[in-house]
Length: 193
Image 1 (cartoon, rainbow, N blue to C red):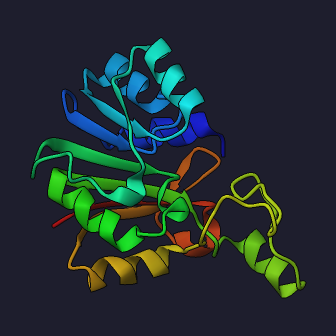
Image 2: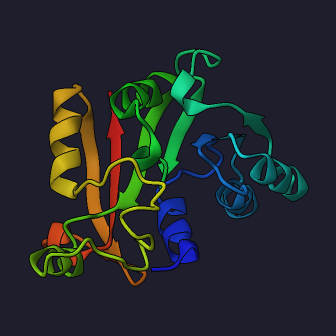
């Protein structure tokens, strides 16, 4: 599944005109897309210098901030939607960031590579860590601190008192609701407090 397919599927979840905070926004492609197609406004949060510059070049408002330090910069309910697209697996403070997501936003949307996707299971069964389009790194050079599954996130959300409004998988541009934990390379959750 391409980044663009994930971007379009996530964008469809964001209501028109929303004020959006995109955590770990990368080069700002998602926010630029939301501004152009959904009349959204907001900010990206990014730590990488080159990505911050790319955001500025795209006309995306960006704040250079290390997410490990939290979101104290933002007031409660400052945003309609807070996005964490391929960000959660890189954070040491994942639980804190999930709670912060619903503190500063009315709705959180998280997407991450689903480690329970059947090709990954097959790789592990064969005794190797998977290397796929969604998990393209070898085990020794991955930027991911952790891997997770749809079932894992569901349990984590419940543990932290988050209410899951929607959950599904994405695979080759298609939304999967039947057995997404095994059939989808990307997990997507929409949640509130």
